[in-house]
Structure formats: structure tokens, C-alpha cells
Image (cartoon, rainbow, N blue to C red; front, side, top):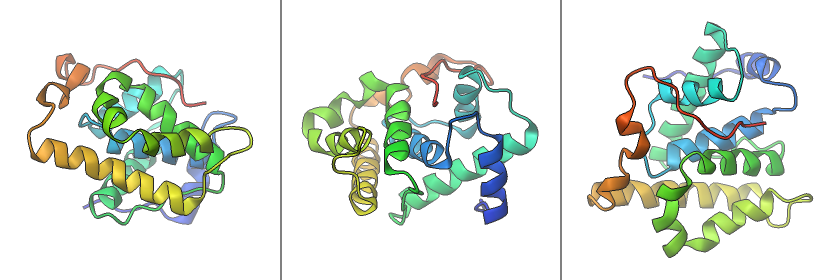
Length: 178
């Protein structure tokens, strides 16, 4: 069972993140990775973050994994609420997670283009449409979309995508989240 981070751990994690990266951005990024078309294991999330040029110590890695699992569990239970002191940063993080596997998101973009538009407009400066309520609804809807497609066996070529070819522990290149 995953133990969510406590306030002091969130503060420590925020202090460990690269300069200019806020927890809202990390939360959005992890929500996209957990919600996306391809199943991504926590170790792969760390690999993506490492490829962004960060040198993680064990404590930070543990906190990132725990937060990823918390986000994933909350999305699965349809109780996820974005950590959004900054709507714009959360949306930018989500879009960075989306960019890691952009081609696999095509079925969602074709059938529900407005969902991602909400996130894209929230990433603008200043945010156009990004309230916490709207982001909560969209994040849950996107996650549900991919869960249902996996349940029905649709887009089976997208289930593992490029991650299927990786050996255990191999890092995945991705767009940096800063």
C-alpha cells in the first residue's frame, strides 16, 4: 500500500526539485503519465526525470515515486484533485507528460479534443480557462478514457508503446519538466 506524502515531505520535495520547478508542475506531469495511454511503472518515471538532467538522491526518488503512486491511486479511485497553487504550472507539467508519448494520445485527441484544450489554455500566460475544478474533471475524464480503452482491449498497439522495447532500468528520453 502506498503512503501519501505528508506536508513536510512535500516541502522537502519542493526544495529538491530543479530551480524553477514547482510542485504543481511535477503533479501535472505525474498526472499525465499516470493517465496516459501507456502503462508506466514508477521506475520508468524516475528514468524520464533523470533524462531531464537531474541527479536524484534516494530520498527524492522515493518521494517522487510515492507521489506518483498517490496520483495514480487517486485517479483510479476517481478522487484525484490536482495540487494547483499554480494552474499554469500544473498544466505545463501535464503537457510535458503528454509530450513524452504524444503519438499514443491520438485516439483521445481524435475523440475528445476539448479535454486537452482545457489544459493547453490553462498553460498560457495568463491562463485562459484553468480552474482547479475544470482541471480535476478533465484529468479524471482523460484517465477514465484510457482505462476504458485498455479494459476493452482497444489500441493494443499503444498499451506498451515504446516502453515495451526497453530493458529493465533503461531510461526513457523525454521532454524535461522545467
